[in-house]
Image 1 (cartoon, helix red, strand yellow):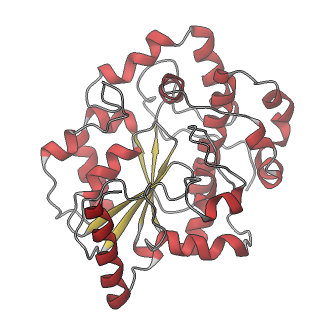
Image 2 (cartoon, rainbow, N blue to C red):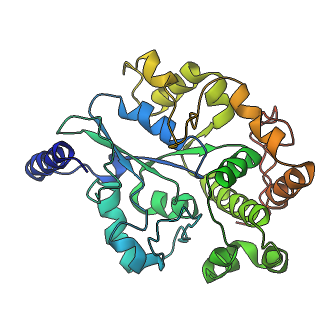
Length: 320
């Protein structure tokens, strides 16, 4: 973190300590699978005056996270999420989440880029590790949840291309998650030991649980493909839902891609970005990935690049 950024954080904390930290209910929680466009949308929302972005505070480099989850920060990009029941009691988590959602959990990782004033009126907290606790966060903190979903083949192709690791064991050792959602599929999941299979299971689980728990709770769902093809219209719709319809965001900010450290933009507008996975994943791999999505009730996508016409279609395989 630069000296300038460190000074900005100190000034922000001093100002908020005097004026009072925002309540968790005033924060925007931007959730979605990694490689789904959440960074792009975070940058757009952070351009609204008075808004400060916080980048992935559930990353294992945050001091409290290893103790709460058992994750270690080994410098490898891993697909890991921790499940919290919506009405569960987790004393160790509650204080941490309250501080996280009020903007007080900050590290070099969370503040790698700053776009706001020293006295933000709201935080947009972007995290790719929150999909399995969205119901719990809404029940306990009433933060405004924006959930982004992208074609599973596109997500998994991007993860594989960028060297992400996934292990089904990280799902199956979570007893409450297995009991609430996954017991019928334990054997089939245990057999998914290669990279494509493990990523397919992870995408299906994290998004099926999120869709199920958000179904009866207020939230805003954004589909990456619609955002990519109609960014201005989709951003305006989101701003209206957030009560920020009078905010002025430049075209350049909306159309600026997020970068993944390679020579190509991680996300960009236009149809070309939506089809690259079709050229790199075999038909058999696509079938496996979509098979797990459909198995857990997600029928938003088929082997085409765009969402299905009725993209609200989710058949929860679990009783409430």
